Amino acid sequence: MICGFVIVKILLDEQQLNEGVEKLARSINDSYGSRPLTIIGIMTGSVILLADLIRKLDMPMRVGVLQTASYHGTQRGTLTIDAEMMLDVTQRDVLLVDDIFDTGNTLTAVIERVRQLGPQSIQSAVLLRKTGQQQVTGQPDFVAFDIPDEFVVGYGLDYNDEYRNLSHIACLEPDDLAVSDRGM
Ligand code: IMP
Ligand code: MG
Image (cartoon, rainbow, N blue to C red; front, side, top):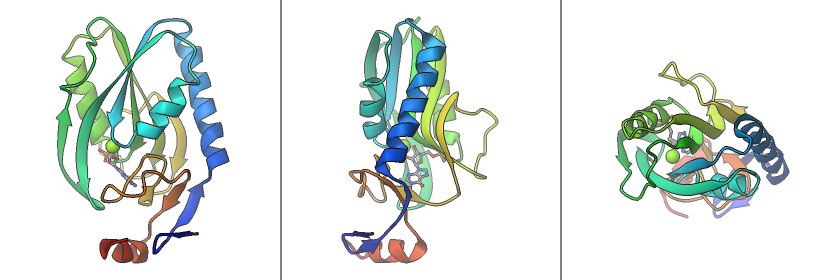
């Protein structure tokens, strides 16, 4: 597939993503029933998942976001968490939503931060879990897809803040990254 000047390989197409998010929503609906939920999307990667997922959930809900950043291109850097805009989570059942569980450090740090605010419970849902990179013992409670250890973009995930708008998930390979680094 040609995307700008970069050739990308489709890992999950639109239909597979829709089915995966349906399945994720069914598990979350089964787990919470009609209990009111406070859903916190971890920005920016979860932006499309969040929008699709909440429309498939049945319980009463409040929806908020927090911002994290850790990547520069494909290189992991220092993790920052900005929870300034987050909803009040005290005594609430909280579901954190993120795009991908890679090393697991981001979700683990966010759970720790949110826990300090005194929620009733915290669970987490991710679209993707990358195989073989985990540096933490905890796992997300709900996972739509396990994927190989590839750098992926689309459906919210970025490379240098680009490609979030693809409606599929694609792998960026070293050659693609070299082209992309020269600009689109
Ligand atoms: P972790 O802390 O290593 O689990 O990484 C989680 C964050 O890194 C995710 O929320 C993404 O924003 C980003 N990330 C990890 N792997 C990828 C990838 O393959 N493509 C794009 N972003 C990624
Ligand atoms: Mg992210």
